[in-house]
Length: 240
Image (cartoon, rainbow, N blue to C red; front, top):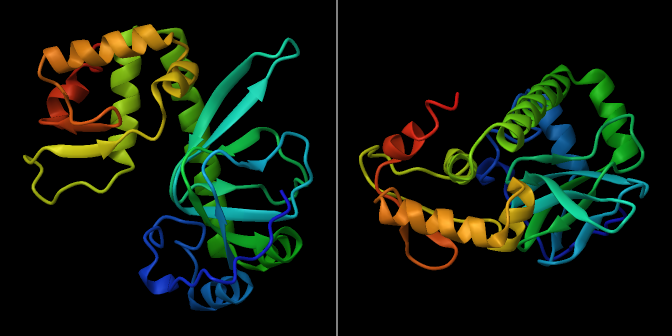
C-alpha cells in the first residue's frame, strides 16, 4: 500500500468521529501529540484497491469514514470476501511489511495514515498505542471466531440477521432505545452473498422474509429500517 498525502484533507482530531475507538483511543496526551504530528489523510474512491495481497505496506491507517472489504482469490479464480473494515478499524500490523489480503474500498474512504516505520518506532515506547493494538487484535480474533460460526452453523436467515446486527452495533444509534434504527448496508446484495457464503437469490429471499415478518423495513435497496432491534437480535438467541 503506497499512499500519498491528500493535502486538501484537514480534520480536527478532537472532533474526529472515530476518536473514541481508533488507534489513538487509549493514548495519553504525549502519545496523542506524537501521532497527530505524523498523521496524514488520504481519500480512496469507491471501487479502488487500497492494498493488494503480498504488496509491501509502507503505510498503516485507521479508517475514518467509509467501508472496505478484505478478500482472497483462490488459484482457480474464485474470490471470497473474508471480512469488512468499518470506521475505526485499522489497516496494517507493526512488524509486518506486507498485506495478507486484498483490501478494496466499497464506498469512498477517508484514511488517517501513518508511515509504517515511524509508527512502529513510536509503538515501542507508547504503552497506550500498544494496548489499543492488542485490543484490536483480540476484537479481530473474536470476529473471526464468530465468522466461523456464521459460515458453519447458522441458517441463511440467521446469517442475514447477524450481518444486520453487526452493522447496527457499529452505527450511531438513537438516544431513545425504543426508536427505530436506520442503517445503510455497506455491501451490495452480491457482496453480502460472498461474505455470508450465500447466493444473491438467497440474500434477497431472506431480506424479503424479514420484511414480511415485520423485523425490518426496506426504505431503499441499501437503506434498512429496524423497528425493534431487540426483536431482530432475538432471532439469534437459539443459535447462540
